[in-house]
Length: 339
Image (tube, rainbow, N blue to C red):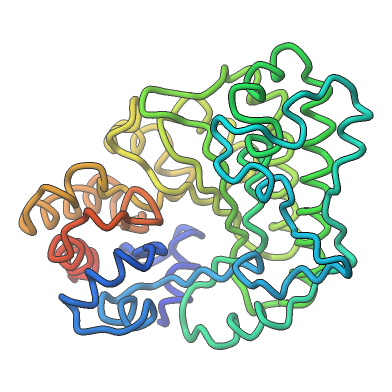
């Protein structure tokens, strides 16, 4: 069974009682630390050295995917407000729906998938996470500024919804085009929106269900219509909405940030383990930074037992920061791959 076939079977619930492994997509500085330990020279080399089962190729990582004739970017709100959290965005001072209509939202007619599909074709016998990353909540943070957005969710929800629908409408159509072009060369839609903090949700479950859950359900349904799994990245303490995410059609939930409130693995496995696959789980905040290789091994073994092997082991964030201990990363991978 190839890694691709194995992860497909695992998400479907029949992987022969063996977990899988994904290291994520660490930034270059982290990769450099791993190169020094593993003797590798590229991310692909790292993945092969560690026995990684998964590859992630999103069209958004390719500069050529969006070819606007006037040079406009796919996410103009990020160009204006690159920090998002406290900066002034295109709609920071908005007061009407007409303001939303004036935003230069991207147009799917300018998409070109040649580069992305070449990367898919070159990724080998591994499980392929793909589709548009569609970080619509983060896009709204860039567009409004985070504090302004969280206020508007309560005071002017129709303005937020209008912007959200324009963004997600683009991502949905972009996925339609990409899925048609990719065919059976990809395995899952992987998209990311962080609704959790270390201590719980960024908003009430009611606001989340009203504003954001419908679009997650639409993207999940779209993936399933194209024969793909739906994998959602959502950091933090999100236990209060996991039932909602499963009902909406999410098949695999990443990254299981186990240090966040309510995200204890045993409780998650007991309540949700038969209904969704968790990906991640090995703490990047403390354990991979300050622990010892033997502790990584023990943590991975505990996760494997807790979820009865139906888990994709990996760090609790796909972008491991360079403060992680490279030997600990190697120990994590070895424990995940041990028979």
